[in-house]
Image 1 (cartoon, each protein chain N blue to C red):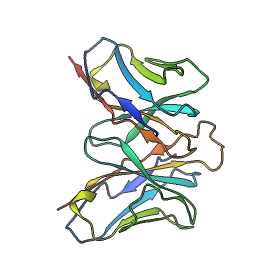
Image 2: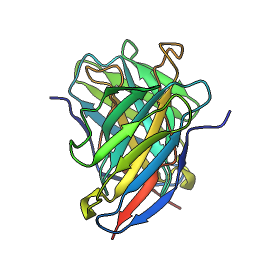
Image 3: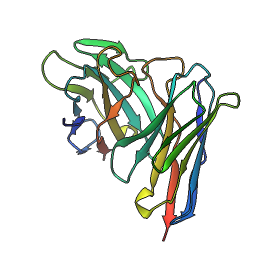
Image 4: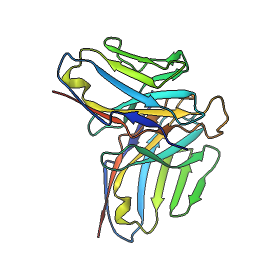
Length: 111
Length: 117
């Protein structure tokens, strides 16, 4: 079946790097996404990666994709207190429109 | 370009009442998706609609829930005779028609937080 898994919690110091990990089961996914959700807010699209790429960098964000292990990670460089939020990875699985979300990783940035 | 809009942002209902949640997609978008987020969980797909058509409602409970996206006006998610277990955040997303946006990206609204007393 389709499943996306994430670790539940990550705590880092301000200025350090954060790495949020995600594993997925469906190898047919074309795109994989990272969304950010701040308390009481909606989902903000952070970045995405096409499945034929290994890495994508976007300012402080680096996405790494290991298709063989079905592992996706999001690295945030120089983490700031404003980065404290829940981060969801998501994929389409075998559908072209039905996003499947992980349960989210709660990132806490300590001053 | 305004983003996806949802209203109300917060909705309180007593058991047995009806809840109506509205979603206006981004300008130029004709595909609408509804997701539900239970406390401490990720989002779960409910239904996918295009104008005047329900494409996939496989994630929606068979009883009490319905969705529409009329030719004019917002998409509506309707929950009849609400129960406490319906308390959740309901998110709407939209995407452009066809593959105009090559990322097939869904853009999310701020959500409606439904509380059933």
